[in-house]
Amino acid sequence: MKAVKKIGVLTLPYDANYGWILQHYALCKTIESADYEPISITRKWNKIENPGVLFKMKKWVFYNVLSKNIFNFYKDKIGKKTIVVDSHDKAIQLKNQNFKTVVVGSDQVWRTEYTIPLAGYNFFFDFINSKKTKKISYAASLGTDTWSEDSKSTKIISKLLKDFHKVSVREKSSVKVLKDILGIDANHNLDPTLLLDKKDYLSLIKSTNKLFKGKTIGTYILDYDENKSSIINYVRKTLDFNVYDIYPKNKSFLHYYIKVTKWLQVFRDSDFIITDSFHGTVFAIIFNKNFITISNKQRGLARFLSLLEIFDLSSRIVDPTVKTEDLKSILKNKIDYSKVNEILTTERNKSLIFLKENI
Image 1 (cartoon, rainbow, N blue to C red):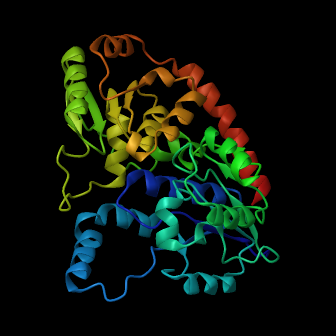
Image 2: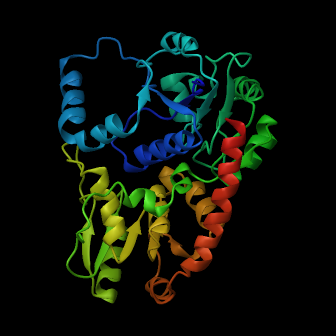
């Protein structure tokens, strides 16, 4: 029997984040469908020395109680995993895995102001020998359309990326940043969640019962404020729909996260979506919903603009201080999903070809 080639997949450390787990699941699933064996590189942030009893207790409660629904999906649906990597020395040990290829992506793996202080240059595969293992990125995100590293760090990253076989980024603006600042040619590809079809996500939802009785607006708001609440209230009154909030307005540490499958069900069964999340926008598109995306600059606006530009849906994003007449215009104009789905098919095929030709 021919040995299955192992592909190491590196993404951000575990988080109670639906977009995070679904993009990781989708990338691993896509690699698996190409007859390779994806292995999740379990990179955590660098180990904290002597974290204390309170920290350990909070961590236990977070994993085993509050976010257990997301963590269980991660354990069950992400097949093989490496040892836990919480230092550079642990990362170096992965050389024994004999990966054919390693893939870094997607999500904001190259948002360096977050990743370098907590994981060094591991997200640029500084621990992998390219003579033995091919390095690529797939839809890696810088998060923003600017570059914040100093000249020393920039030189290190540029050298590491020049050791990659192929570089793929998620935002169109990142192609220019990498070329102009790092001297790297990059492909622009879809977020991994868009590599799977709607039916792939529907197969994860076991219940065929509709979640809501009446017409409902599903909201997935990561950062509530008065302006966002006003937008939701205006749409609710105008459409005369009910509202289902995936997150409460005042989410605390003790927030209990619903199952990933129920999160998907909200998108399946809602009649309209309002979100300030990148992946909330992605799944509104996947499930062919009319939606409004509220710009979320603190989490990286470039991600939203690049995504919506692909599908000619830039008119669906609004500033939190949007005027009522603009909202009225958006509600009046329904999305032509026949056109959107044609674009998605074309872009998905291009992205799949890139991934499968380079792993």
